[in-house]
Image (cartoon, rainbow, N blue to C red; front, side, top):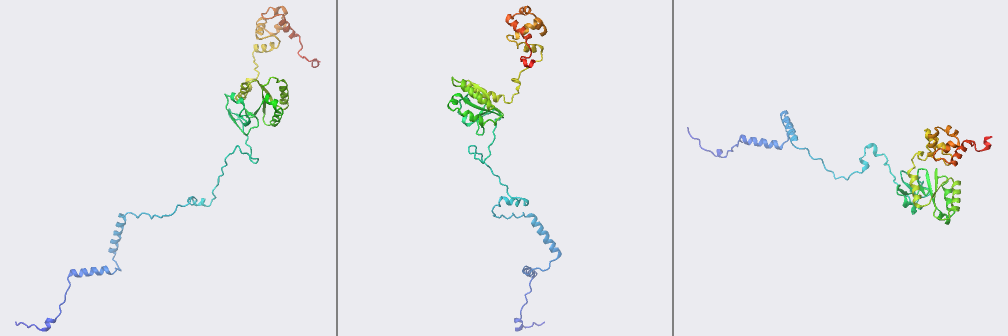
Length: 317
């Protein structure tokens, strides 16, 4: 075979560069990044969804946003039904015992417990130094000098003060005439010539319905106040006469009414004669034989049986 000579046309002929397989893949990958994918296959969508769920479960939730807002007022924190309700107002009044006006109501203070209430004008009274068994306290709301019970008021008077101011006791008793149920006038006798003054005070106490009590010392006056307060709630059985149902007690109460007869004489008569009938029927010689009975006592005993039961002759008719 003969070799063909090289011509000028063959030298000028262009060569075609065919890209390799790797270059083609790179080119396609670059185009896929630049152009958006408008349509995705079902398999691709499922793979992307699973990947997003896995990522969201592994990452912690974001923290809540912090707002630098000022604190809301108290009334906005209430529930809606109470937001429009008016806020109640409380008025606190401080007591002022020393500043009492005419428009303010006056409290009525009574002696409570075991405390004696004392009027301020009597706080320097020396009688308070002798009150040891019962506490006392001053009070501006009482009218009497001392209040020794729920309904018991006591007025204190010194005869020496009464001699200097004789009209004082009249004004005080008139002022307290309808204030207490039990009204007491305690008079301290501190002068020598007291008969005329006590006679006048006794008349005033009777007319004003006051109980008059005389004290001859400050200790005795203080003891009266303590006794009134201590026996405030006691029953009257301590001072009430006790009548016994026994025969001896009745005979003693009956025969001791005769002058100069005592309890020993009653026992002697009952042991000797046995009964009241036999004592009344006994003669003078039998009575004189009893120990402790003289002529005068026998005459008084026998005269008691002969006297009428009604001393007033008009009532006897």
